[in-house]
Length: 552
Image (cartoon, rainbow, N blue to C red):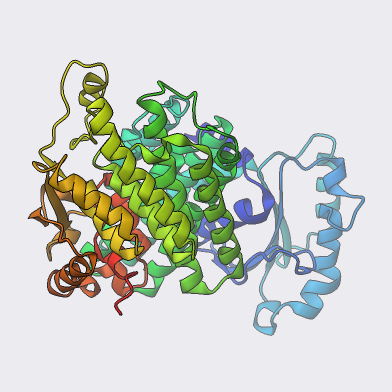
């Protein structure tokens, strides 16, 4: 396990990664950080200040951490203002006499050089000689925490045997072993998350903090390992599952109001956001190329499946930026939202498979895309795409006897495509949801086309909309809740007048949907519900799109 951790450490950058890991490690050791590393702010040699008892001798000390990336060689040791020796000099010349708080001045002081590499042999004599000359017994001492030391500390303090079983370490090792396989189902990582959250003793605050920091560490290890394998799909899926299972655990244990839980949840959420943005940065260039998603599989099946998967993922990433902006008002989130939404538009413009849903469940990805386009004032683009989908579904059945498969069975889809079985016209949530989107987008012609088709071509198709039950959150974060909760409003008929249909579903919305009882809505995180729908394929709650309707 130490080798796994050491390899992970070698992948970290100084800014935003190594210096983000160190505070959590220190807290688990029992050393309390007194500040946070800040980018662009002069530190006077000290990247991280901390105090409390040193586990080596149990003496209360003040710690000065100097954080560097990679090995400490001659260039890192001396010769520029950011070098190790210059940093130590600034600690003695400026930080201790002028910036150290008065109540810490009398404490013994420990200067720790921390890096995710090694101290090179060429610099070792310089380090020993210089630190020996600066050491004052009982007052000033030095330590070096390289990759080997950090690996031991992480294993001892973030993956303790008495709290977490050995299966946790086996789980992360097995996850990494399969990381280069595109079809890997991440089962080991999913089991690891559940083992930590639901099978460990987390009755105390201390153990809860350790568990959440361990989960963040495991997700980061998967993230950085996958980047090395050039496959960011796995950490994307891992981050979705972790945030859902974590929310289930927080809710189950009535911890939604605890500030320390909110802080640790935010750290994991920020890791998720980093993964999602990295995923977008990797794939978005394919969206500006005509049929840029073509060629990753069979044209008739794989191309549309991949297209709708990417529509769902990219829309979710953009909607997360929207949620983040509403929470924190960060202008960067607003810029990200605009950029990613433009990429979705490029994806739609450049891939003809955009209007060919093969599964009834593709309505989840379509709803995510339409929701994003509508909330970002791209209503005309949304209406055009909606019209294309409706026309293609109608023509697909007329000309090729094809209709979106109600199940998510790939085998059934292939059998229909090669003519070994016929498509079923039993039921459809896709058509019913498209009809509602016609109302949202004032798409009268598209509604009329769908109305005629429902009476003629699809007269035997049972149009239906799924609604969540009050107990939905007992199931939403662990599986497809469609099969165990909620109610299906079926046998819908489309009125001749679209305005009448609008009136009908507004009445249903007021009668059947009380979104404020959902914890993720009450706590300002609507993205959680959308993640659950995309990840487990639970139908999207109708209130998401119905709130967009013009009620005049």
